[in-house]
Structures are given as structure tokens and as C-alpha cells.
Length: 458
Ligand code: NAD
Image 1 (cartoon, helix red, strand yellow):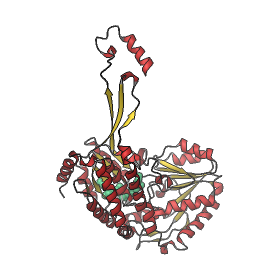
Image 2: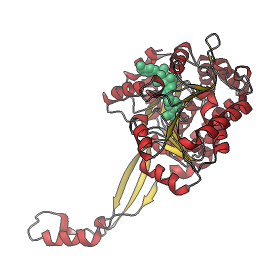
Image 3: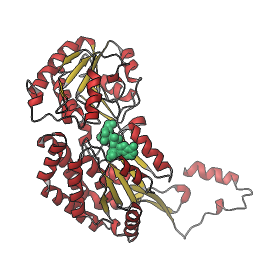
Image 4: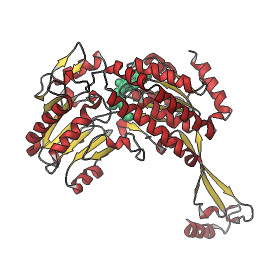
């Protein structure tokens, strides 16, 4: 595919103004929804083929989320598209002010493999709804899902509006060398840096949805049985390959035994005696990640799980006790079904661990003391978080979703997606029936007057 020609075609189409037409955008969103529903079985099958993710998880974390987002946009697009009237500044009296949402133009979306359907479509919905053209490059590690994504897009959009480019790093780099009006990237921190550098060449604005080591603090007051149940769900969903999965636990030392006991109970309840036989437990995406994760548990104190099968890329839900901070598992984001537990006695111990890492994408606190929980939330910097559960902040479209520092730049979901893919143009309209003369030269003798104006009208 000739990318220069493709981008040129999309620009020409954008310049016709068609992508900004609200009724066309709503019609396309409706068509997209119908097409996804029509292809539901094929999508579920494709994701299962890619990494043995269960149909339930794929519906709940991929198709269901995308359909909900489309419904929201269809319902809200009219009101979000209206220019927003804001209070004028009295210094400009008489005037009014409005904010117009303007699409950037040509958007490049590069998505990862771990929620291969949802993380491609969620940003795409925002980009289209805001009136942009899109080139979407899904991950090469989930080829079956990428193929069905392409079929869906080709059936709904013309190529000069949205095009899917399948392929790996080379294709991504070829695309990145072109000039875009906006780049939306979801993936790892090292690749995020490559994207940022490529964008800098043309001063292209970016959203970077990255990863990191998301901590989970459990204090003495926490409800351990319910906490363990919710943590097993949040950690082992998608085989632990979730950007916002709790990466490691920091638990008050008095609660370690009860918590470990409850984790065993809950893992057993969710995936049975042998999770390898469970239909609900996904596999590791590829050999490279399998090897990386297998190395992490070698020479550690394994208190639950530990079984690996290189032939099927299976790694059991595995829990480690107090791995040293300089061990491999505590270096980078784990991104697999391995849960290190570190005990603490006081805030100093917690800080020693938390402040050792870059700002995380997510942050979890389990505590029955809401004051303590809120202190944690206030005192640390992170992308988003939850008190007494895991992951669920992701499902509220009213919350901006994104990282901070090394875990990302920008946020999206719901109206935030619409705003992410729009430039907010601030416009002031002046009236002609009054023209206060103070601002005009010559300024002689006007300093006092201008000071008074600022004093009274600002
Ligand atoms: P990745 O960074 O390896 O790949 C993501 C995308 O970038 C893929 O489409 C890939 O083809 C492309 N890519 C890879 N290397 C590239 C390069 N050198 N130049 C240009 N493009 C390149 O990430 P992944 O393994 O697919 O996903 C896992 C990572 O993504 C984890 O770190 C996870 O935390 C993060 N993630 C973040 C979010 C979020 O919303 N913040 C969501 C899911 C995953």
C-alpha cells in the first residue's frame, strides 16, 4: 500500500467537509454497531484463536465495551458537537465567547494486542465522532483479530475515511515517518518513546496510553476475603495481560497469611484445581513473553502456582512472597499471571517501594478506613485508580482514562475521547455598538485608567 497516496486521499476527503457532517457520523456509528453485532461470533472466535481468551471475557472486556461506547456517542454526539458558550471576559466588554470543537484531520491509531478489539475500536470511535479520518494499525501479535477488524472497517467506511493497515513494526515505522495531525498510541513505554520522537518531527500532538507497575495496597482494616476475590479477578483476567492489572501487592504484614489463604481459595474457585484445564484462563501471547515471565519466577519464593507449560505457553496463576526489589519481577511491568506480594509495617516501607517506580497507570487501595484510603489516593501520583476493587474505573466513561509521567500522556473514554480528538478553538465575538478607547495608543495619561480597568473587570 502506498501510504503517501492513502494519506493524500484521506486529506482530500477531509477537506470536502464530509467527515464533519453530524448526521453522516451518526449513521456510520450505527452502521459500525450493526456490523460488530453481525460479526460477533467471528470476533469472539478470532480472539480465542489468538490467545485462548474465553468468549465471556471477550464479550465483557472487548465487544460489550465497544458497543456501549458507540451507543453513548450516538446519544450524545449532537450535544457534544454544539459550540460551548462560556462567560465572556469583562475586559472585552461587550462580547461573547464560544468554544468550537474542531477535528484535527488525519489521525493515526496504533493499538496493542492485549485487548486487541477494544483498544483498536475505542479510540477509533472518538476519532471518527470528532470528525477525523483514521488510519488504524492493530497489533501483529493478534493476526486473527486484526483480520476481522479490517473486514469490519472495510464494510462500514470508505478507505478515504478509515483504513486498516495490518502488519508489524516495519509497517508502524513506515506510517510514523509520515505527517499526521494526531497520533493515538496504546502500548509499551519503550515504544511510546519512539512514537513521541516520531511525532515531534512534525509537532504532531499525541495521546500515549502506556503501562507501568500498578501497585495495590492492602491495609490492616481491609476486607480480606472480598479483596482477594476481586484481586484474583483483576489480576488474572486476560491471563494477567492487562495494562491496569494490579502488578504487585503491598500488604500489612499481619494480613499476609489470611490473604494468601484467601487467594488460594479464590484462584481455585475461579479456575479449578488445575487452571491449565480451565476454559476461562488465557495463554501467554507469544514465546518471547512466555520466556520473559518464566524467568521472573525462577529462584523466587512461590507460594501459589508456579507451573509452566512451554508447549501451550501456559503459566499458572502464580503468587510470590517478598521478592527482592532488585529481582527481575520487580524491575518492569509484569504483564502476566504473576503476583508478587510484599509485606510492610509502616508508611516508610510503602514509600520505599512506591517511590522506587515511575508513576503508575493505576493504583489500588483495599481498606475499610475511608480516611486512610483517601490519604493514599491524594498522596501519590498515578493515572487512575480504585478503592476496594480493581480495574472497574475503566468502565465509567465519565472518568478520563490515561496515565501520567511514564504511564502515558492524555486520556480518553466517552466525552473525553471526543475532546481528545478535537482541537478546542476559543473564539470571541466583539460587538460594534461600543468601543472603549483605553487600549488604543497614544497611551499618555492612560496608565491609571488601564490599572483601574484590570482591577474592576478581571
Ligand atoms: P507494544 O508497544 O510492543 O506494541 C504496540 C503497538 O506498537 C503494536 O501495534 C506494534 O506493532 C507497535 N510497535 C511495536 N514496536 C514498535 C516500534 N519499534 N515502532 C513502531 N511501532 C511499534 O505493546 P504490546 O506488547 O502490544 O502491549 C503491551 C503494552 O501495552 C504493555 O506495556 C501495556 O501496559 C500497554 N498497554 C497500555 C494500555 C493503556 O490503555 N494504557 C492498554 C493496553 C496495553
